[in-house]
Length: 443
Image (tube, rainbow, N blue to C red; front, side):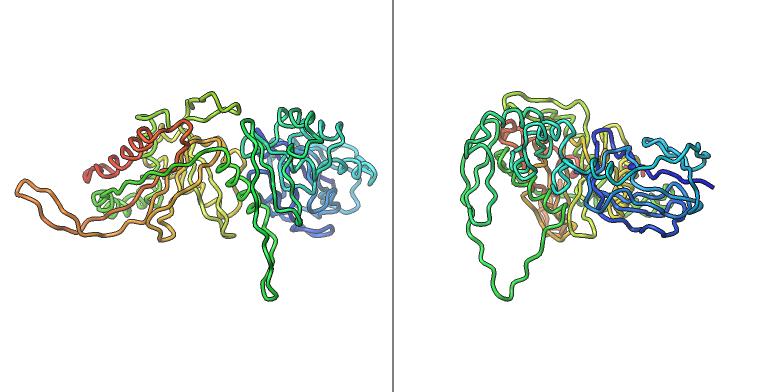
């Protein structure tokens, strides 16, 4: 009989650590192969970790709330409680069919575990790279102080440059964001400006209920405020006649599902139209660098799609190289990512690297929306619900009134680099692709 190491798995190329949210199994519990042992969270996504072994969980080496490095041993599973040996399993790939290599058991003392947990900023909801945490530790920066530094990296992360730029101004009152329940004034910094936001005092009534935001909601809130702070938002609108598109989908969806086993929703069609329009207007597929003076033109067209989670929060899985996929390929990707998003099965790499985002506010019965840009992108498209409306139809015999299917498209864009001409022309092109849908298009 043997003991086996349960390893914190590699969750993506850019993910170095994860937070243990919940142990779904406790010490002494029996575990089946591929049964969920614990739930973890990275700065990108929450995931369930299945067991690569069958046996008994004899040791949990970290507690809920602990931040653990990828590749670390987080628990020990035994096929026999009296076993004195366990295997070392690769943290980057687990092959359930392979026989584990047995090595003498390593005695991990509580003091070593305690030492690992020190200075890991486990009480923070933010993600910090090992380098940033190392600098913070050397400079004596507490977790509270580190949380206050305004990050310029992706999704507002604190980078090496941010913490090094912060150090010389550390004792100046304007160098950080003040978060005090008794002080409603906060100073927000970026690489380009400093200004003060006065937050209103909020009273709580006797019958009011106060609840804590969950981890993902805190991240969303922080990113939305950051995006509004970084990018001057402008929103343009068009109304598209998508009658032909609706008729084609109604005709094709049964054959599509029967032949390919995939449900054909409108989302893949919208993504296909967006990818085509981006190729026509590549300057919508860009980012602004941290200096705010250089434009990064993206080679790949990676389109994120906002997906609702059972918790009510939103997550944005990304269709990589969407312009290189046909409608069936996009449909497969959309359905797969949406299904796994609802089950918390997404990997961090699957929700990053987006260059443009689509959000379907029509799925909530909304006609249109003014979405907030997902940084560091410069544009996001909201598609509204499709409604029947009377319309003037031009024919060779003259104008007539008929019932048509219409929808609103709204594009929010970063006015630093996307002017009204580019934003409006791009939005109109997306609508043109949808309006000019070929009724005889092959399924």
